[in-house]
Length: 364
Image (spheres, rainbow, N blue to C red):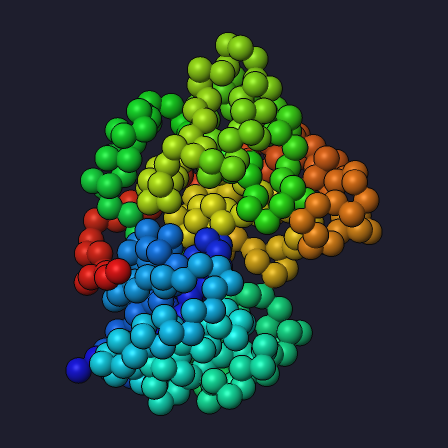
């Protein structure tokens, strides 16, 4: 019989992608020990398209609570319903009190997480985080899957999302897309805030260059990214606009993952979709403004990280405190185009589209 571990997953796209490194590490350790392991992930329902593309995960279990909602009775009922699974361990990736509260009701023998928000009574395997020893978020995730103080695997596993050819073709067909020309996927939005967004006119310059070279452009993002996508498209010469598809708000997360898997290259802000592109093995130019690649870099081989070295960055603010956003305004399109040439020179850009089994099952 398989050992069973429940993981309480994060609430952001990029963080969930990076959490796959933990899932891979746990499965690698289980294989080395000759003990089958079943990993179930409890997370917001939006994350299901990511989890079903992670072969290491047996089940995605929807967390039915709104952000910030306590709902003590609901958490008790959900935790109680999971007791029958007999989880030997629950690993809590978020640092909140609420995320640890539910694990108490699961009654796992071992409840693991970083110390924070007065939750020491809820967890019985509480770790004290040494931020200098574990500067990256992915390191902190992987460390929770190992005995306290044990060295991390070297190298760290890297997330790898698995797409299915039929799903990719279905997504392309539903959105009216083709692959007759090379595809530049751009991700000009950033859920965190404007301080992470490269200027729309800079994106337009890069897109115009690629279209002139015979490429097409797909703009990816949520409906919230519609205004910046419109600015990018309107910034192109009229003759180039037919080759730029604004897909913001038109795709599900599942479709965005599947069509990104066939992109020739990706240019992105520091965002969840940047991490998706990395996990799909796409060549990436990643643009950093208010945040730092030292904490959450895209975990892939063929990446160019671009940032301006000025005294006020990284500030980690949602909007520029000095109201000039020089860290991104001064990051010229010519730098991005040069970086794009470099990642394209390192790859033949063959898509990571793998036929194989999905997770055994998922449940609501």
